[in-house]
Amino acid sequence: LHGTGKSTHIEQVAARLNWPCVRVNLDGHISRLDLVGKDTIVVRDGLQVTEFQEGIVPWALQRPVALIFDEYDAGRPDVMFVIQRILERDGKFTLLDQNRVIRPHPWFRLFATSNTVGLGNLSGMYHGTQVLNHAQIDRWNIVATLNYLPRDEEVAIVLARVPSKNYDKGRKLIASMVAVADLTRKGFAAGDISTLMSPRTVITWAENCEIFRNPALAFRLSFLNKCDETERPIVAEYYQRCFGEELDESWMREAGKA
Image 1: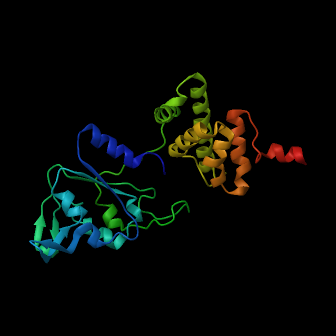
Image 2: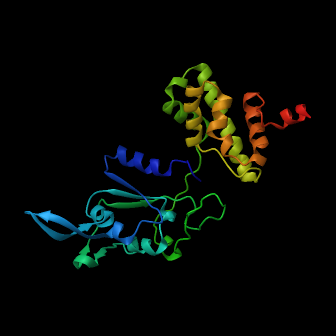
Image 3: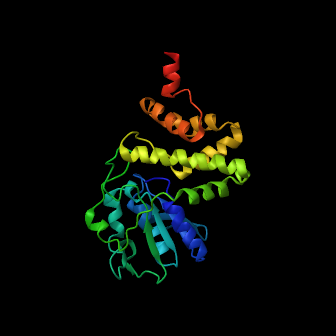
């Protein structure tokens, strides 16, 4: 799922190991030339000459670098075949443009993150993702799932990002925010709503609270307006359970007007 900190997790591990880390966001416009390299015109001694410029893959492969392909399933499957051999045991990289075979640096590592595990947009939440070749998926040595954190740890992360809320009343507010997020995740899992709150959204909500000084308004601007109109009463009910306050979208408000 999105917002669980997949890419950040890798970056933080690399930072603690003092390990250089390069993060590449993939999309449908990333081509083989971007990853492998291409001939470019450069100026040498006042003359224009053609020179091969390495792409990110051969460049990182020769260095003690952690290379992250972020949103791996957003890349085109035919382009991603360039890393096929690298994923094999003792895999090397053949640079056809220079008739050269590159051996990976002993401390080079390749990581990839995705929300669909290469299965495509089955839930309808992740448009733009691709169904990846299963033979390539099979070559990854380790596949890990990163779920949302326990409630107390998520509260601690939000407080670390918004330290101005780190007092008694502020901590209670953040705990209520995380409780709302947890209800949206349970509602999503049960099929009641089609949108859920990630920790990223909770942090945005807390930051907007600092701007608007109103948790209900900040909630509406941070999350509620992203929800389908037919689902907003359900989300408003989640808010009411945790904050004891009815929103305009609540069923109770509609019943009172009737």
